[in-house]
Length: 346
Image (cartoon, rainbow, N blue to C red; front, side):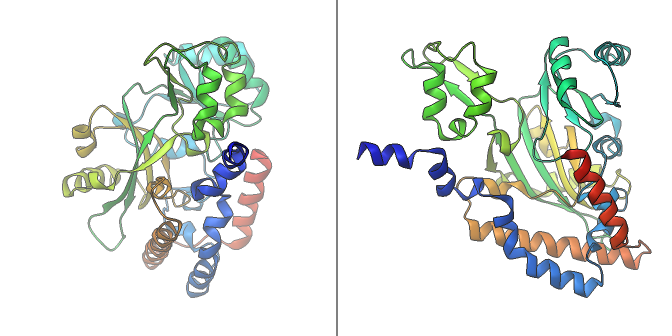
């Protein structure tokens, strides 16, 4: 029985038991026939490019994170600069100083997805390591030191005067809590979500793995709120109210050419969330998902149903924008953007 339990708790079976860890394509596969049907109706395989006219490809892929974030009113975004390659450590440090940015910071690629190369940078030494690994232009962003992190999904049909919030995901950072008995390594390996990040965590905490944590001592293993990095996504749709939708509608309508997407943000309190008094770290267009579906208690079939609605909204918004004079990007243009995106992020 002990052997079977050990096998059952291997990383392979942990992923097998929880669909949230399955390959991205498995969740998307049931949607392919529907996307194909919508494409035939729209007479374009890339009809989604008109969903957000202010964002390249509507935000499906290839858009500059820096350009998109700059669409957000300055009062709602942290100080962020774009670092262009090639560059050197001393040049980066100069750019940080002249823009009033101090450690810790968040570095992230200007193109990318699913947490790729998003790092918390604490020192000049971290800058050196990051420059040795990053191959494309990247953002240096002020660390938003607010206690609550959410992803808020907003939808507005162009033919309607107001929009609404359709999804809220809460984010619980990956942590372990000591008991005065187990080492940090043992605490990581006994927690399923942390065990899946073992290869990264054993390097990050290599000097602390044998340390026994005191009772109730908490260590945040990953400070980046990304599902692929171990953050637990929680269905927070109970927070959606008329007040919250109205607040985010007022904010969203200040963003030129934006109708559909997810705000990744931090906020001081739930009251501030209701009033959209938030700091937006990233704005994602139609390529984003209503991430509450990754709540561990959310069923696979229910998630697929949410994504069918998601694509229905993309189609309807894109068609209404087309009727208002927004052209779909051509397939050849889309392929060129895609090839460039893949080449840069390979």
